[in-house]
Image 1: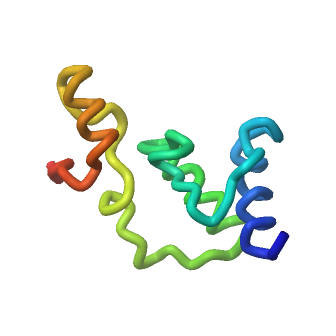
Image 2: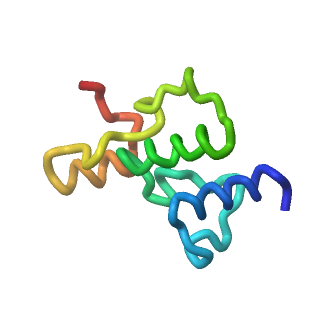
Length: 91
């Protein structure tokens, strides 16, 4: 296993994911779509990257990649935004 994937798995463990959750993760694993990490959880995950791994995310635009907590007013809107996060409008 190369360093990047090893670091990702270490970071996910720090975030609280167990071995059974992490099994099968690879380069194409997406935090939002595959792991369901978004909103405050995604922000916390990004913070772990910064503090534990020294990643400089000062120019990272969080809202461009992760929706806010529970976007949409109805369940159908939430599912739509989960499937198509690019359609979430900024407030």
